[in-house]
Amino acid sequence: MKNKIIASVMAVTMVFGTAFSISAYAEDAETTFDETVTASYDAAVVMSGKYGENVKWTLDANGTLTVSGKGKMENGLGNGIPMNEKEDVKKVVIQNGVTYICDYAFNHFTNITSVIIPGGVTGIGKEAFNHCKSLKSINIPDSVTDIGQDAFRDCSNLTSITIPDGVTSIGYSAFRRCTSLKSINIPNSVKSMGDWAFSECSNLTSVTLSNSLTGIGEWAFSQCTSLKSITIPDSVTGIGERAFYKCTSLKSIKIPDSVKSIGGFAFDECTSLTSIKIPDSMTVIDEYTFFKCSSLTNVTIPNSITKIDMDAFGDCEKIKSITIPNSVTFIGASAFGRCTSLTNITIPESVTEISSYALGYTFDPNTVRNVKIENFTISGYKNTAAEKYANENGFKFIELNKSGKPDTKTVSKGDANGDSKVNVADIAAIASYIKGIKALTGDGLKAADVNGDGNVNVADIAMIASHIKGIKALS
Image (cartoon, rainbow, N blue to C red; front, side, top):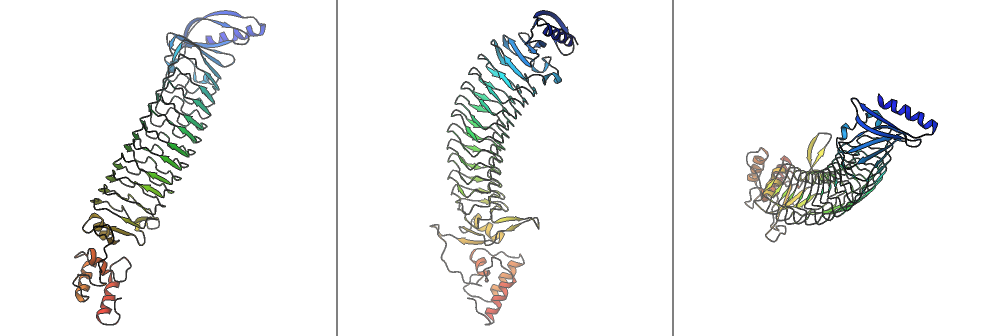
């Protein structure tokens, strides 16, 4: 409790308006120091301690925490400032000579409004200013090259910050939940940016990325709900999982050909995104990449893509048409699931596998089941995965000829067995198909759908029977 005694003596000093020196040695569970403390009327020191061997701190009666000495600050969690005393700190002044702000240095100093960092400081450590929720702005000197993990996380009132040209890396979650931050300019010196770096910065509207940045980490800008546009520089080769997850105001984004991979869920629930051009450098559209992009209408898939994974465009309900290039070999489960405006699609011969519910299905919440999109048609080539998927799911299949045009060969209604006659043999073939004994494919399946409702059932048999008996001819 010697600190409280010192504080009382200093209060007396202030009353008499006389400055004097106090030599004190304090040793308890919270702080150890042996130094001369000078108290004055306008800057009475009420507490002091050390950040390691070469750097000390003093806290005055006005709430100013002064850090002085030479070299790196150390031991941020053991600096001797009790948790309840952190609330008294209003301002931080780091003096010349200090070269590094250590991990946890000012962690949860919730009432700090001002920080002065001198030139010569080269780095800001992990959680250095984490949860300094009263901090509104900070000037980082040009000498700083590294901003550590969670350095400014939860600084919810931070409205502006300038990242100097010397910074080469921004750590994991460095500015996460800085909910008052409106714009950020990441200088060209920055080469790496950690996962979650600006996640949940809900008022961030403008971002300028470094031209030296090689990758955008996982969740980097997730839930930046005010971000409307962003340009990815040519230096970027990869975009991490959920990098722009729930950026609900994002309307446009330009992805350069330098990008070779986009992680799963990267643009999940970007509900304002209207168009996207997949770069030529990519080979896979990962799972859920554009899931629930409910305003997406224009999609360009390049000839380099070989795989469209599960739910890649799931719930993109405004897509009306899409071109699958000849490079694609695999279309995953529900890849275009619940794309209710997409009623026809052309599948190239290159596609060898189409997974369950990949095309032509939506979800019925009443029955809690996948149901077919009405009048969905598939155009493709005979004896391909496209024809197989259409037949197995009961979709209308339009056969294309070698020139890619619909096959104009006439298919006679009711001629299910393809013998150029309509008779009881056709009824038998259809009955066998309905019972699951023998499949009908291609032209036979088309001919069997006499009433053209997209299904082959007893109604078609009845019409053929009526035709055979001369009651009503098939038109």
